Image (tube, rainbow, N blue to C red; front, side):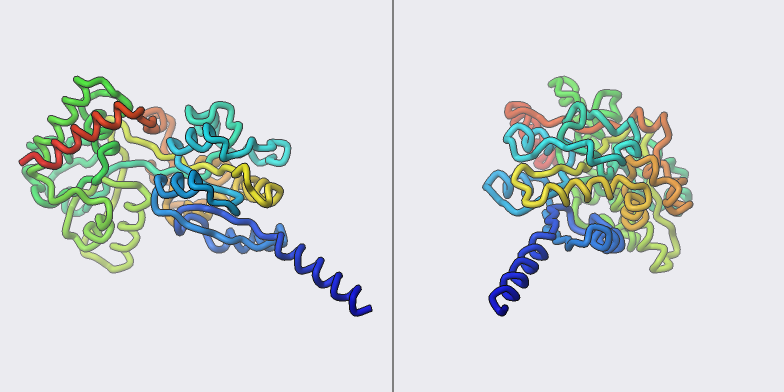
Length: 352
């Protein structure tokens, strides 16, 4: 009898231990209430591990890390995962909520036909700004001229930061000059570099780390950065009851778009739970909670009714059709292009 009881308890323990979904994701990139609801619905436990950059995630998986079921890479990181055979095709018969995804965000250049991925959320790279101060100065922040035109910059010298990121800064400069952000033409890259070098003396810093804080404190008036970060800065300034307001928006010349996607690793211990999770996150209410929490854009058409009313008015989070057409995902560069851009970037950083 004792032996039978021990066997039963052991089997139950193994079953419970197996009912765990392991997610490898950005930090703070799913609402706690969403996790709780999924755990209750699937009668499982969710364990999350975090990365701080796509390069970190790719390096860890390429080195043979196991145990993860779902990973959430940005578009340009998907081709390496697919090419190296680290992800498995989706079983779309288990994903009925695909119907909720906006067609604009399906069939991307990184995974034609969505064989391996489905969109999770997105951010845009844009300008965040001290709305009060720019209004006083008569500066319209709807153009990249705010960070590239010396005439405009003369009014806000020392109060501007730009991302310490060659790909993003060159993309912005290319768009300001009327080129595609994905251009790799040497003459267009050179023009973009010249624009950056001319503007550089007016900037306070290249800053990818603390611009949320600097905006919130009023130390800078314009920041080149990510839409979800600008949402945080605006929220923090309001919470702190600053004498000014922080806002953010898209630029008329166009903006870059970073779409994060859900993928199932080939080595996933629980592909069944992973499919349930993907389908769960494609349900409108579940998808909306991330947007409400951190201000990310939402590729899920069914999420809109559940998003905060004020958020829905923000075209950086819910772009209209005209704005969507101007959003472009950055394509990965080949080895030679990376070397060429690195050389141009070094010249930018060392210029006086």
